[in-house]
Length: 353
Image (cartoon, rainbow, N blue to C red; front, side):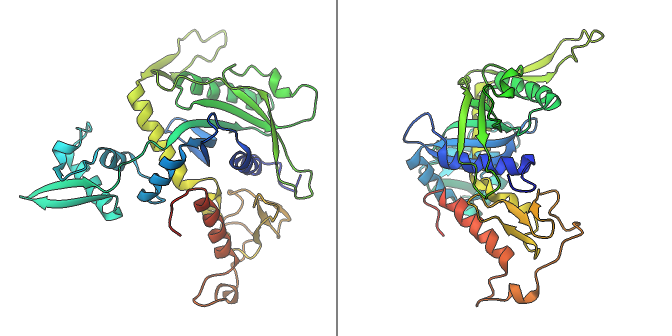
């Protein structure tokens, strides 16, 4: 294990890279897209594995790399093939039409729909049919060291996932211990959740290239109504209150899954560099295949929280580094961002360079 790689952040990047290279989808013809730190207002997952239809994923590229939010999805999914007054073409969204008009103008500016004025009214026409490109969503919680307190918190999170069934599968990824029975199997996790034990490099720069299934996940009922747990009793002798919950209808779940898939498409898992300081002269990605962020000043891997402008070791790149090449292309930090962006785009077929 590399110095500083014992953090959950570094383990998370290892898991993302392994999933991108070795995840076996439910259908052999599926393409895998991996993202990290995504979810809903009430629940955020460490890693998301999207199993996608190859042709539909290529058609999704027509709409660009940026995510389509809920308002834009409402427009592009229902935009008609022929010119139509937008109120006749789009179903009522449940909020004022003026917000729909704003979304139509935004979509037109991004070039994903066409608009025109006819008799003082806004008409809309689609440029491409929006595909249902994401087949399945697999949520993974990364806990390299699953101690008692982490396991207690994880139980409630997984119970929430199973009850709501927003993802098709829920998994826990933990660092392999090499024991005959992995410690995570002794925890009282929901039986519907799968368990992955991930082998981490031994310190020679070898990336995590192997993971084994200690417990298979069960498919969750994403097409059925889900239960959103709002509050639960503490479980002690002095708390006799009942749990509070509400139902989530399948239409809400389907819309939320599209929004999550859109954000995953745009962000991927290499976007961690956007919240770090690659323009620091001490920053560099480890050249071991996983591109873990490494700090020469500290001599170890770093997290996004550590690598910031307030870091006492932060030193901006010298101007001479940022003026190499013509036209000006930037220094090593800019090159790192371009490298990670190319690798992200490489997993999304059909995008123009």
